Image (tube, rainbow, N blue to C red; front, side, top):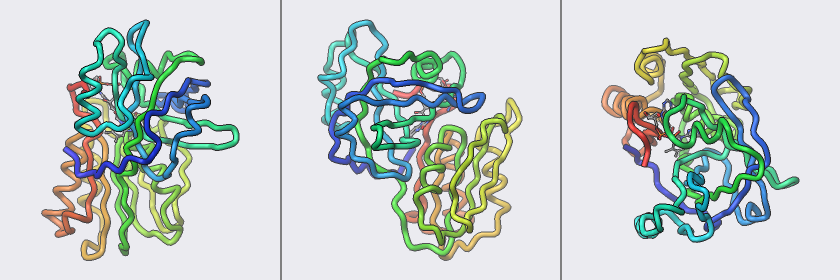
Length: 265
Ligand SMILES: Cc1cc2nc3c(=O)[nH]c(=O)nc-3n(C[C@H](O)[C@H](O)[C@H](O)COP(=O)(O)OP(=O)(O)OC[C@H]3O[C@@H](n4cnc5c(N)ncnc54)[C@H](O)[C@@H]3O)c2cc1C
């Protein structure tokens, strides 16, 4: 479930190659992409996200993928021969640099299941991939208070929003982690309190973030909310803000970034 509006930047299909990867915290691997194709990428900051095409077969092709990933682009993708069709997953730009031209993506390495997590854990320099830009989910509104809620998968999005939002923003960022060692150095405005929350192994993802959210003193009259992560976290945070606090529906952006026990795609 998501109410994020897709706003494709003009980048089109961006073919990249892996320059390097680094385990930045115990469960987060930062993959740095580069290559001449990255010059096409129209960087927008905040939580800008994209479809990432990952090679899973020896002969996978990246040059015939669609330039946008709306309904038509998705149909085009499905019509490609399965044996040379990369797998698509969704990721966030963690950092973008122009000199040299590099784009970092932080992948949660969540175990041996799935495609993207294991790929990031083992990827070698020179590996080809492609990005199809989807724009920013975060659309800034004039608001007295901002609340950002995320788990590990939404940490790159919240990190980007905190880095790029107005320096006079006021509010809270709740970031729920399974391992406190996965905390990162963030660049929040002075008025944004960052709450690092810890979930016990076996606890429902999002449960600690949701109970912390419910206990916060908030100005619901003039609030902007943003909740991303496991589907229950995203929909639960939105439900709480809209139904319990009376925040307008159009003032809360939410997106289930992954679903417990279910592969994406
Ligand atoms: C807009 C958007 C931006 C995103 N940005 C990022 C990002 O920058 N970094 C990032 O790490 N993720 C991000 N995600 C989440 C990522 O797309 C999913 O976690 C995706 O399912 C990973 O694909 P996979 O191939 O590794 O696992 P899948 O094949 O999708 O799933 C395999 C198994 O792993 C489980 N699983 C999947 N993701 C997680 C997780 N995060 N934690 C625990 N178990 C999981 C599934 O429940 C399933 O059982 C984003 C998602 C969206 C929609």
